[in-house]
Amino acid sequence: MKKQLFLYTCLVLCPGLLHAQRLSLHDAVTIALQNSLGIQIAKNNVTAAGIYNSYGMAGGLPVVTASGSDLEQSTSIKQEYSNPANNKTSNNASSNNLSASLNASMLLYNGSRVQNERKRLGMVEAQDRQLLSSRALAVAYNVMLRYYDIIRQQSYAATLATSITASRQKLDIVKARQSAGVANNADLFQAQVDLNTQIQNLQAQQLVIDQAKTDLLTLLTLKPDSAIAIQDTILVDKNLDLATVLNAIGTNPDITAAGEQVTINEYLERETAAQRYPSLSANAGYNFSHTKNAAGFSLLNQSYGPFAGIGVSIPIFNGSIYRKQQQVADINVKNARLQKDTLSLNYTANSVKSWQAYNNNLQQLETAKANYDLSGKLLALVLQRFELKQATIVDVKNAQESFENAGFLLVNVSFSAKAAELRLKWYAHDLQY
Image (cartoon, rainbow, N blue to C red; front, side, top):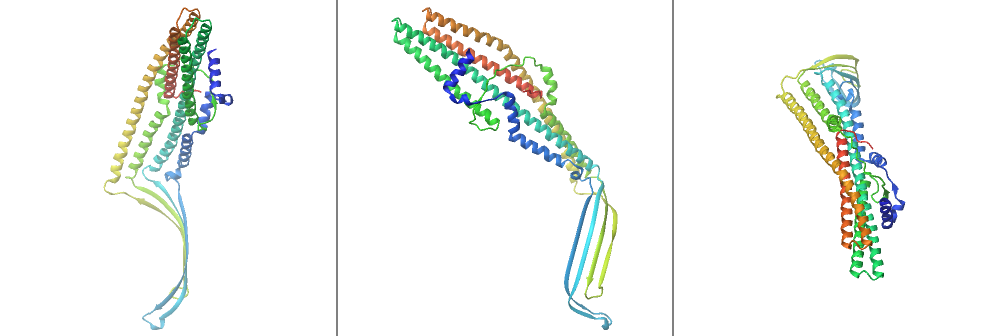
């Protein structure tokens, strides 16, 4: 009955809802995950990290290069020898120098720097996947919170609609008494003022609902002026356990990503330490050179053939730069561990606080439901007594205020309990929709 009165009142105030698209919680979260720009960016980061995650990027594959040149020259030559008969002078003599080479080099050893860098790149990709999961979890949580907030506002509007029905009934009773000559204009005016005030309150509440829907549409990356209808109730999961939540905090993608950052920094430290070790590389290739001169002592010079060799680079002294870089890298590892511990501590503390709010609101919820039912019965009883002249118009107004306050308290306690539940499931990486 109360829901029917609320829907009727909303349709009278907002005829556009007749054409609104009904939106469920599952649909809302699915749309948000598909349209979220932040999630698209996080997906691109995962793709980029996957491209980087290779032995080639770590420097573990051979490097092959080819080069070539063809140089044509015009040269004037004047050559004098001890035997004047051998003297030669040539103006604008042409010459050609053709050269080509194929080179290949491969790093054989550099203190396991390649292996550590390869593992670090794999860990960076894994961390980006965790950050994508974290982003999706945050989007789902925010959408669910907005969704249930709309239900909260609509539930309070339903309470106001029920109170308006009581005000209309009160006004009809006063009009009937006045037509019978047993009621004065003061009661009539007061009843009309009360009705108008409550209609205005419902209109103001409708604005709150409309703006809450706009906030939800923004999260869904949809047009803010789209018409949506949400018909749902707030059902609180009463079976959560604090110990289970605390044990599951380690699976939260934020905590996992923080742990992976520790590992990434450890690999960076090893890479930095590897700079202090000798580097051994193998080189091989093929060279070709062809030089042809129109004049001069050598008219043709051509050489070609393969080559192979081993190169060694030994760092001896560079101002202790590598050692200091390693020390800083070690500090970064310690900081990453401290950041993870801090995040875990904060999540644990916030989980306990959310559990306290969840547990407290569950205790209040039963009392709030009982008060709401009693205030509804009280309002109906006072209206009956008012019709029988056993209650005053002030008594009816007080009963209405008690009913509205009880309805407001009930929906707020329900929403607070649901919000605490969602937060606990967010920490435990267990949001379901």
